[in-house]
Image (tube, rainbow, N blue to C red; front, side, top):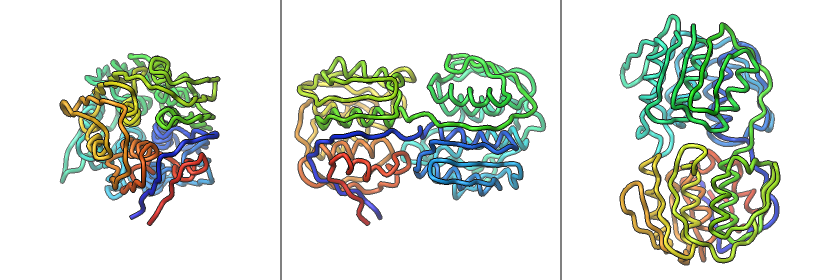
Length: 419
């Protein structure tokens, strides 16, 4: 199987452009099902999860034309309401197709979504099912698959017991074609939620409050389609910023929105990482002494769980003790065992908290990427480490980072993909 070979330590220099947001692209593709018209999507990232989404759309009967970063999708002649388990088992975002299919066709069949170790089977979908039920869908579980029917979806009031980005977006997409008014409370407030709502409103939906804890949706009979330009990936921008800080590099990150990673830049100001920024660019300066800092992941605009793994690597290079508290996914800190193997001084208090005492010298090792964000953290650690690091299971990394080996190589990293 392919793996990355990285020789460290490396300092990076130059410019790197942020690609389209994975977490926005994975929602607009299912949203295409809400309209029989053709949607044109631009700034589409070339990553594995997007390939699987397009494969799923085509399996449903959609016509998809893709060229570079642009894609056109027409779902006028959908042939089935069943989501293919062989495709759905490969990525968590397959669950996002259930709501639009139900809203459009009145029926949907799907398996439990797949994904990485923090996604496959371990992340429940009860908030999705409860939401669909609140919209008057009948739910049955047959042979381990979910079968939902609704002759007519009806608006409802639904309170998310846990803030969830995908749950908020799924209910929002499903409710736009429901009869009556839907009020969603305790909603996620991420920029991707606002971007999706803005697109739907441009095409006939009536959504108010996206980006706030309460979203109100007045159902409409039809949704049109138009052009959707995917926003820059804030997680990728934050990852590159942390990578630059950890490797003491001067790096300019272009086509990004620094305002969307305000919490990270605020922390940089506290720990001694200097930077300059504009509306759509961010320049990280080589760091000297990095101060320790405790982080606690939180829903937007708090510290993103998707940046916790990269930041944990940065904490191994800080001068003192840091506590990392992961509040979203209880398995996300398990990768720190590999950092310990590389020489980091990390104590796991419980599945949610680790204590890191730095700075420590890291050494190259043979590693396996357990999930997308831990995988990119392994790359950062390898860039810091002395000697050769081999990272297996890079499929998980390529699910979310486009041609990361080539892009980092252009910045001076000694990295290549081997079979």
